[in-house]
Image (tube, rainbow, N blue to C red):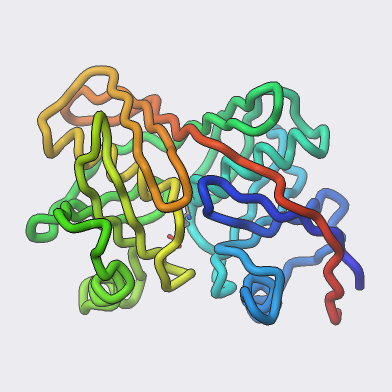
Length: 263
Ligand SMILES: N[C@H](CCC[C@H](N)C(=O)O)C(=O)O
């Protein structure tokens, strides 16, 4: 079976996208996703997404991690699928779509390369020692670092993700360092089980945790540099609840092609 695919990247977080509005795929198994996301034996990607029809919404986002497991929310993936929906003519410059964590609103630039995506409200931030733990659609661990350019993010992230507390469910591990008006962030991602060049729910978690850490409140805008580019997070914080959270950044169609699937 031959299936068209599109490759997108958002700040270096890269994804395989498939238009499944006509149900060309009746689901996709874990092994196929992992094979397609493999950088040597497949197309390569941090994740794979299906864009499907959903009554009452513009579309539905179905997200798989690179290891083939159906993931939780993916912020950069969400931004890329909005750009994909515009490319397909499913939406114009604004959308509401359904993802695993519920309804998302988003806006996209006329050129189709800059996406502002609303994320779920957050009311709870826990602490694990000095680190912050919160869910921005996906679970995140946020730890302050001082040597981030040279940090061994793979080994330190791997150790935290696989410790007794997190091993079973997994967690995404973000290291953050103050930089200019904002932060520099590096992330070890669950489901990729490696450092990625950017993580949208991760930088969102960092921005919220740092607002709490620094006792900020009001309308906050936080620029974040990641290995693959720059992102921005805007939100309201009243000291307890984070709302109107928007993750903003680039989304780019890199190439398209045809997959040969066995089934
Ligand atoms: N890269 C993603 C995170 C994917 C979530 C996944 N790694 C998980 O928690 O299973 C992002 O931009 O938000």
